[in-house]
Image 1 (tube, rainbow over the protein chains, first blue to last red):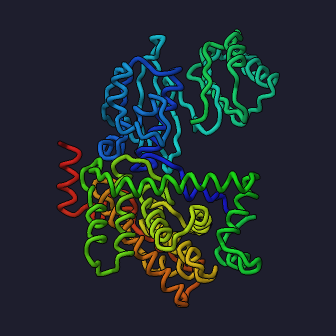
Image 2: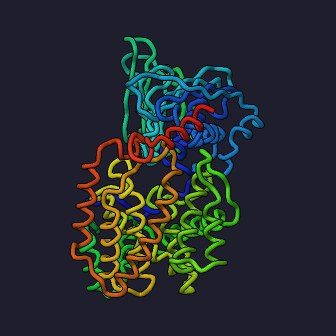
Image 3: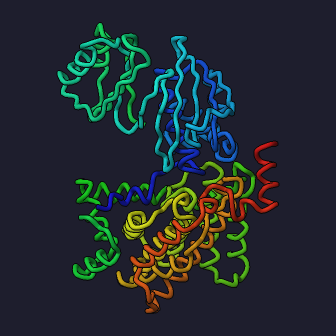
Length: 223
Length: 291
């Protein structure tokens, strides 16, 4: 079966020069913004591997900042995203570091202070052709591609938590496409990523938030 | 429908007495379960951005992010209008269009990946030039884009359109094959001739490596877009004149895949071989990243 559409070949419309180092970087920035629940107050962007070596020539730094500002991959304002970020009051630094061999060559780490003043950290990679993968969130290993709507939550690692959360979705006729649970230790807080076929409305997110099992929950729209 | 070879699509077009573009459009509508007007409109959006990127690159030259290229498109365009280019005015102008889009891409302007960002200049250049020469409507050009796209889907399926997998032959080579096949149809050639044009293009780029200086989409990428655009026109003319490729296009695509996988990793977009490790490239790289 040939999986390619005519629009996989001609398209997307994007700001150049590279689908992995620019378009993918914009999507990482957009996901970071979503994880921080909107424009953060401050962000340290740490570039690793090929991102660290070639970001200046590919505008990877501008692309990530553009994403954090909420721009799409074809938004021409990306070219001036550093200036626009300053004007928006975003306190940012661009750094380079070696995050370790286990990370993909095109990886960025985000250390953010969100608008509530809480620290949010995220590590994500650009895999090529604009595809991305978030592999770490607040120190927890996760796998989020940003193609489907996703609910990211921290919950108490105890019997019944998962059922309580999934029942809310079932009651609202939201189908779960993929689901993964991660934890560091037994019976403390754990992480859950649920990717759904449908968008999750704000009232469902609020219902989840009101559950005893839930510590925190965030809805991540596809980017 | 599952389209897995060019032979299959040429047979369909011949049987139904339609262009490859028409078959490709119908197939896309069927697969996406959306009406023809919507699908055509989506492609028209792509075409408008392509045109705009050509115009921007010629009118408003910018230096690239890595400062290795910028302004060449305008130089060639001016020359093509004022002098008597050895390759003819149309070829020189087409090549200037390809450089223009590649420059816009390298300066973080808006482009359409076709099939990739690195090879985004070839199809727009050939299309704009043919539209101008033959006074075609945007609607005709949109049908041409479906022709180009269906060739691309078969190449992506049978081989690859990624420089990291198969080298530049898969990026600029695929783009030129797509452009050449579509050019044949835009000039009222037959489906069979379109297939021969694509085959002749790929035969001429077999083994082309991806060796970007400093890892950037600048040198030699812009000039390989130029090569792709002129090659697309040359092969389209050969096909329209009735010249055939002895090796059928599907087999040529398989050969590209085999050659691509035989290339060492150093010549597949890693900037560890070819032009990327010449002394001058190393100096340029040093200047860009450690200034």
